[in-house]
Image (cartoon, rainbow, N blue to C red):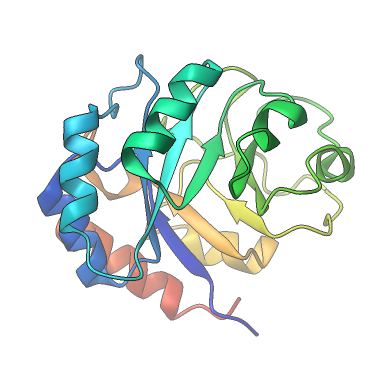
Amino acid sequence: MHRVRIKICGVTRVEDALAAARAGVDAIGLVFYPDSSRVVTMDQARAISRALPPFVARAALFLDASEDEVRHVIETLRPDVLQFHGREAPEFCRMFGMPYLKSVPMGEDDIDLGAWAEAYGDAQGLLLDANRAGEAGGRGKTFDWQAEAERPDLPLVVAGGLSVDNVAEAIRRFTPYAVDVSSGVESAPGIKDAQRMQDFAAAVINTIG
């Protein structure tokens, strides 16, 4: 048994970050993909970072960003972890010398998690999302949870279409290190709902991983 960690992704407002912290989450995600409805400016990201209490980690999410774009965020914001959500090669992900997560596009056919774990072996974990390669997440869709998949020797983070109604099933199915939710705790894209975050966190805490 272990405690399943919780990340709320796509936070765009200080009040939502504080509500997430009060709900007991372990991390928030700040999106730096320009085409996302949850993208934040650097000023927004700084304000959110300054407002967060201690021990709530900040993940900076990128989708096929340039090296300069990633370095600008690192130098300006000093995030705790990088999250690469596109077609980034292992060499690109590790060149920044920071902890990182690599998203796996579980919407693709015949995903070999073992091969992904081997390629991105220095990642802190693999994030399983419902998107196809090159697509943004946060669409409220799950991937095929029933498909047989080997368990790689890396921590797994389950994302994609999670909500208070299905997160317990996801935890029982994958026994993940963490779960990552975005649209499932929103009242509108990029606008988190405090009660939904509390209910989601309670559902995770009450489920044995």
